[in-house]
Image (cartoon, rainbow, N blue to C red; front, side, top):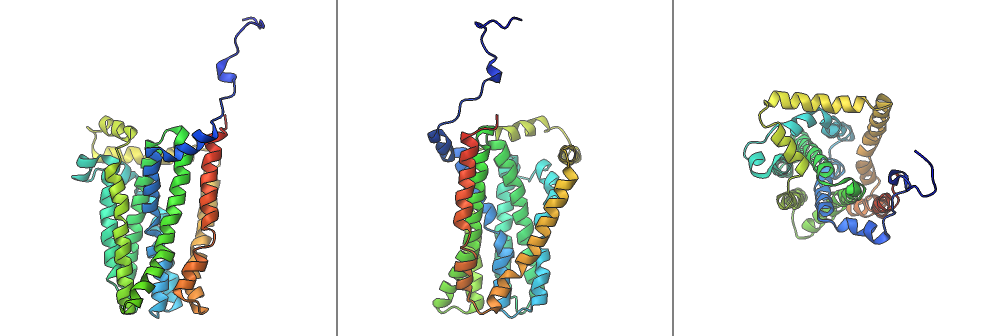
Length: 328
């Protein structure tokens, strides 16, 4: 092959055209990205209901700090959700999978269980039955972690590569907003119920009932969405296999793919240690602030308000930069 000046250059070696700023921004208005945004809200909403918001309720009810510290273990399902992720990925939910598809079926199913778990937690009394509170909080965390598994799979399978960054930015932003609603929003709501003459216990109960109703936003989103094509193809390809074979393949494939990556164990240890310290220190923040004399409204406005704007701006800016300035 000659290097004549008239020869056309290899198109694969040319830099890819940069997306315009308008294209980079309008990606956030794509229906698929908007679906992911609302599912992100649904994922972020339950986290604080078994975490910081619950701890404020317990401290106001007179539960001692030692018991509150042990409630850090309630978040264990979020850490160990990788253990049952293969089950969610491979197993069918009777009626739901047939009606909505594999991903949407699991979404609706997990959200229905999540609503039930939050309502169960709403009916408990931390002062009289902390054990039942722990059981309710554990169920909320387990159902919330299961929903996270399905939403993550749905997001990856439903978005093309060019929309993944924007989808992740929308997901994180909506996740943070969901957390804000279930922390600052829930605390303000409890205060509002109290101002109507409700007892403190009744106000907390109705606050949690309201949060359970807001999970329906994610359920409606799942019903309006369409099943990802990748999931539908995988379902058709494995329709004749037994549940055991599907679960085994999903489990082996997931762990083998991760462990094949460079420095996989180092990355795993870093993430575990980072989240370990963050989880235990964060558990005591709410009761510490309450013990200092701040009200629940002060905690909602100051502790949970700081950093939200930075998180939202940073998330959307990252998605915009990734869309406009590709790595290739």
